Image (cartoon, rainbow, N blue to C red; front, side):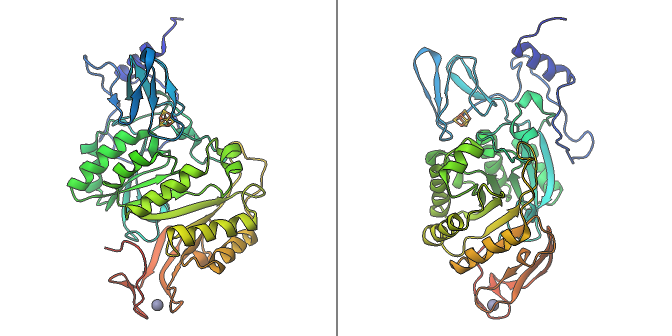
Length: 382
Ligand code: SF4
Ligand SMILES: [Zn+2]
């Protein structure tokens, strides 16, 4: 069998649509609406774009400054996230305009509960991640490279076009880790804003302050995964660190972009009551009591199949801890029908948004206020 270099493999795959190893990313666009990659004669690997935020070093090496990993990458090599490559000292993404997933989702699925409830978000993802979480739900995307996923040909102008066609209110960068397809996300958000579409980033928050601050200029909401309130968990379970994620939350807040947090409660690893209490205190003090937090039920998967699903009483306990610390909006996710899926007014206690799973069953917020007592409910409602 002919021995192929990685580059010839990529070129041939892009030209012919050859059978690539596929990730399980279903795409819900109309058949034929978007096509596989078509290489141009002057650009044998389509979708390459120079990324912002990197530093040139000696011997054609570069240092990527997008996320706190700050990978030093030699010529013809890639960084940790696997979707950017150094070409002679020029750092280029291979994941611009070729998402491996595109769906129209309810915004509640992200989850964002205080951002245009009931609206749809046109959601896209590209391969690669700057973490390797042992519980990842989307490991087939996050731990793949762009040449290992089945991709669509979807430059930003087409993302906007499809989002409008399906009457989405926003574009969501999600499923995998959008920080590592920064350039594509930024360009889509900019094009979306010009066309009246909002943008939401669903992220692990592992991003340097400078690129995040620039991104905040084109984003309308951010959901950050709070993996745990210990550096140990970040290091051992995600191959990351806690401090940059806390800094990212503060940056989003400072830029007045709507922020919600999600915490997947993994039995024995991050369900310690005193850590949860300390985290709730930090959120109230630093981000404010109006910051929503969603506690999700863990299901055994990927590299953590040895642990059981989160017991429901553990979720109830973390809910109570956070409410006792003064957080106004605490939710429990992945448990359809749980009372903590709905939003209660912090003043009168009445349900102002009732939900079942991703479905909004009633909405009693009028002009951003509780319809029963007039209390302002934090969020983006119109
Ligand atoms: S974005 Fe990717 S290449 Fe850049 S520092 Fe992070 S992991 Fe490394
Ligand atoms: Zn009220």
